[in-house]
Amino acid sequence: MQRLGKHIEEQIIKRMSIDNPWWITCSIAEDYKEMPSRMYLEEFYPLITDLAVRRAVILMGARRVGKTVMIYHAIDRLIREGVDPHKIIYVSIDTPIYNNNSLEELFAYARRALKNEENYEGYYVFFDEIQYLKDWEVHLKSLVDTYRKVKFIASGSAAAALKMKSNESGAGRFTDFMLPPLTFFEYLNLQRLETIIVSKPTEAVPYDTINIDELNRHFIDYINYGGYPEVVFSEKIRSNPGLYIKNDIIDKVLLRDLPSLYGITDIQELNKLFVHIAFRSSNEFSYEKLATESGIKKDVLKRYLEYLEAAFLVKVVRRVDQNAKHMQRVTSFKIYLTNPSLRCALFSPIDSNDDFIGGMVETAIFAQWIQSGKSDFYYANWAKGRDKGEVDIVWLEEATQKAISLAEIKWTDRFAENPTELKSVSHFLEANNTVKKIVVTSKTITSQYELPKGKIQFVPSAIYAYWVSDFLFRKKKHELLYTPLM
Image (cartoon, rainbow, N blue to C red; front, side, top):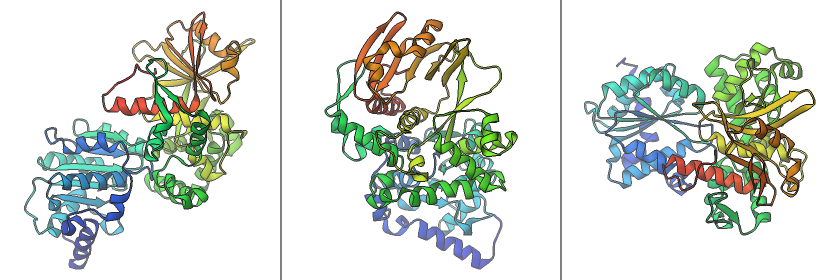
């Protein structure tokens, strides 16, 4: 290990002791104990304690979705289950005094702080915000290979970039775990509001509600404030979401994280693009249109969109045509915020009658599906002669690339009351006889309607958002209680 000046070494060791209070108290800080746990801790924790497989765990997710809190809660559980607190090391890579130190050097400093420098076995080592270390994946893979009896866990906020490097350099050595923004399922459960949802003994729609108007009010609150655990429980933050979410989340990503990771020099240009997209979340875009509206060159736009996806701020959804065929040339695409409350922070809260409510309901439902981590969903858009139409979500079977399921997102009961008005859905089904599941959301109505080419299931948007997020959460636990939604 490269020796630093004695003063610097002492400062690093002192900082290590401050960041690991359980070395002295045998407990995490009380304020972390009092914070509510993400439900995903139940899936994340077994990856940490699985010592039979020699792999590092990579916890990915956007800023402020609860990664660090989940790490502390995992540490708390390790201690309660009998792990020696002196065998648990936490290091936040973005701490300035740790700059220019490798992961191995930081691991060595921690052992020196513990006065156990020659012991290399039985540790649980957590590296938080690992994306700030250049070539982190090479360092971490080396640690996994060298210290065979140590469990390494890393977290980072640049989700897509982390995953790419994890796949490239960590094959066979890393296990990825994506922590999504707060889902609607979690939002209700964290606030003990899940009793408003009732189970139904049916595969078509497994949930109903005892009060659809109240559920819809909670759904609007979720759209405005629900993506971040801290916002949910703080009236002060909810009264001024722009101050917290914009300054503490959006600005840090756009003004610090992305410039430092990708060398962006014109941060105002990137910010301008994100604000433009956030205001129009769920809209269809093209590079030509975006370039004209934003004044940013197309080649720069493409890079910026990649960066915004890497930071898990937006999701770009690709287009298929009426026959569910991929377009030979990418001319248009939709962009969604991964968390609908980002829009509220930038502009203002919306209500159920707002002009933008339709797009934000669609964004909220996409936010539930995005947690799957898959990219097997598209939107369909076509214009042939007088025939034109669009379907919001289309799933393709991986092997055949045939359409197998679709969803049309509405915040109105109009189409449930008049299903024949769903012209685009009917036209798409006529061209794709492989579609087996058809969902159209409503505002309050649950019903079914028989078409010549299939059966439409109408379900309120709020119930559908709960259904999707609950289904994907349980799927991650390998407890498929219901038939798949797609």
